[in-house]
Length: 132
Image (cartoon, rainbow, N blue to C red; front, side, top):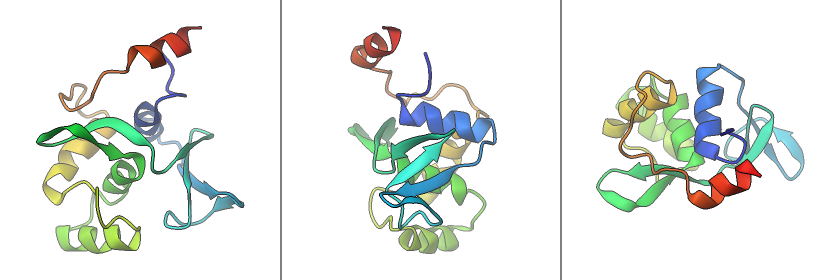
């Protein structure tokens, strides 16, 4: 199954393959995440507020948005206080990946771990759509 319809798999593939991730909005390419409406992953735009299949801890029905996972990876080396400051500067005042959860998220995104119980399976509808 391809990554083209699933923002979570597209993000993971772009990170693992070290493909440059860029931003765009209604005016075209842009240089910052706060002004972007889309993340461009391997040449395909995804709304940065796309709901992913990555469940938040302790909440089986709540999922991270694409930009929250991307920023967690982007700031993976930042100390905790700097991470929190940068989250606000990137426009993520809610729904972000916590400091304590960030390592687990980035390890999965980078392919350092292959299994993750928080990843919800692809729905049958997406599977059927992609197989036709």
